Image (cartoon, rainbow, N blue to C red; front, side, top):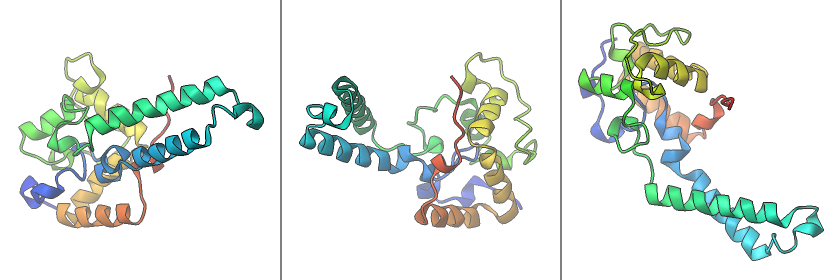
Amino acid sequence: MQLSLSDIRKEDRGLMSPCGIICSGCDMQLGESLEAIKEVVQIWEGFDLAGVAKAFDMDSREVRDALRTMKRFIQVRTEAGPCPGCFLGSSPFETCSILQCVQSKGYWTCAECGEFTGDPSLACPHSDASETPMGSRHRASKFICKRYRGTNVENLARCREIGYAAFVEEIKQRVAEGWRSWHVIAPLKP
């Protein structure tokens, strides 16, 4: 199926990243963990969990450390606001070589590229000179496929199969039914 950026309404362009990650199911866009953590902090402080930690066989220092970490997360996420999605910019990945490549060609995603294979085991064939992981399309696509267990490539292949407009409706429905990107993310080894 022929794909084109013009098939996507401007307000829907942040729903999926150029590499096929479903941004609309990402917590950085939804903010669900931010709200949950705010509630946990309120409950723990209201209960004075740090003060009564020993009664629950817990270390009060660990509780205080956890509270500090959660408060820092709240501060950082509140200041950053919701991520609009990679394609729309202002995300931590606006320097991503995949995003830059797609935008330079006037595409919405890699699905429009003639070199896209639809095979999660095959990374983007373009190897850029950058040493940063997201600065090389080859390394970035390899990393993203590993982190998202190849679902990003499956999403792009599905776009080719049914078209952007139909895929956008599919992902809106999936997210409305509770699908989240953290359901498919593979843990990264330090």
